[in-house]
Amino acid sequence: AAHRHWTIHTLNIRTNHVHIVITAPSHTPERVLIDLKSWCTRRLTEHGCITTDTRAWPRHGSTRWLNSQLSFDRACEYVANEQG
Image 1 (tube, rainbow, N blue to C red):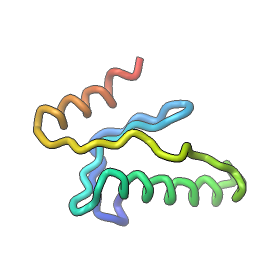
Image 2: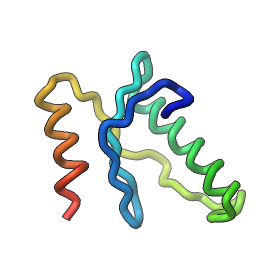
Image 3: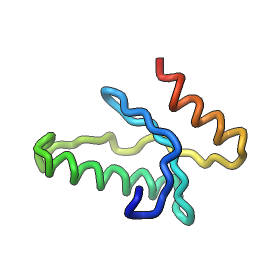
C-alpha cells in the first residue's frame, strides 16, 4: 500500500482470508485486489511461508466501491469489530 501511496484504514487478517478497507485513488477495487495478492504472494514466498507453486489465493475475492461516508464508516466498523 505504501509503495502505491494507498491508505489502509482498517485491516483484519483471519486464518483463511483478509478484510481491508483501503483508499486507492485512480484504481478500481479489482486492481487493488490483484496488486495486494501479488505483493503478498511475493512476501510469503520470500519468507518461506509458501512455495512458488502454491496457489495462495482464490481466483477472485469480494471487492466493492465505498461511495459514501456511511458506506465507508460501516465497512471500517465491520472489518474492525464484526469478525466474531
